[in-house]
Length: 219
Length: 106
Image (cartoon, rainbow over all chains, first blue to last red; front, top):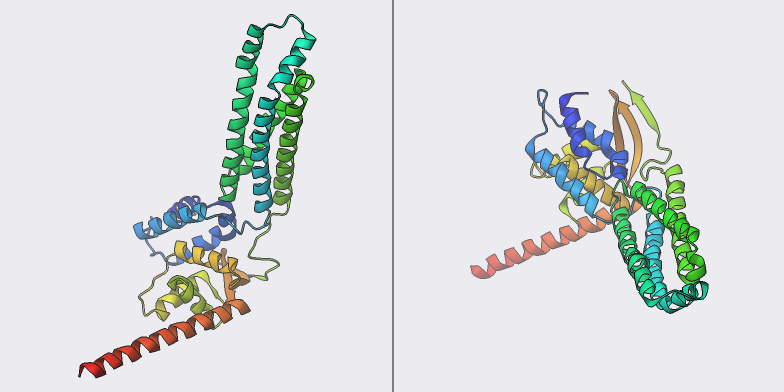
């Protein structure tokens, strides 16, 4: 690979993954065909044009990511955000019943202890649902704009959700706040469905351009 | 329709072409006025495909470099014809008005 080709490929790395899969090799061929024999670096005009179009490609909502399953996963992410807000409402509404459930299990449970539980566990849990709702929406935006790491980042997020749900179940939260745990379960199922969709689309990621195109090799 | 898209469709009107062929043809059609850069060309091609106006016809590996040939779809052909007729009508109207104005100025 020549220094010029390497330089062009570095610029093309700015484009979204799906676009590079479709066009990178072809664009390199076009760029090299248009370059001078002794040229070692992309011209400033060419470089600016590539950077500008890469930015445009990243900012425009992608209708064409090959397998066409971007929209369903984005809708699932919106659903995830809505469910997080539902979880927040559920926690707020079940504060009274939670306190009653704890008091029933431990008759010596004082108001001061309740405030401590509120400050150390329930308030952080409520803040976490708001943060999570924001993360769901952020993922929907990033995924819709073809951010190349969106699936990996969402996988990490799914791991954290799974850990959180298991930790809640392990601490017996289901006995104290069954409704909130049920909504958390629905959130987890939504994340699970999203990850399943990603894995399915990766298995059949096909080009939008060439479906069984004839290919000829000319030397 | 943007001028780049119109010229790309025009370049493909007579038959399929690969990326570099389109760039050279657009320069020729526009009398050297429009020199498409690779970034602009492939953004336009992607947009035209999304709109169903062009499709890939075949691929070749020449000197171990990929070449993909693009062609108009029937919709693309219709769209280009409609666009060209519209431009022709606009141009005719403009020239007619200019002639008229020159006539009254005398």
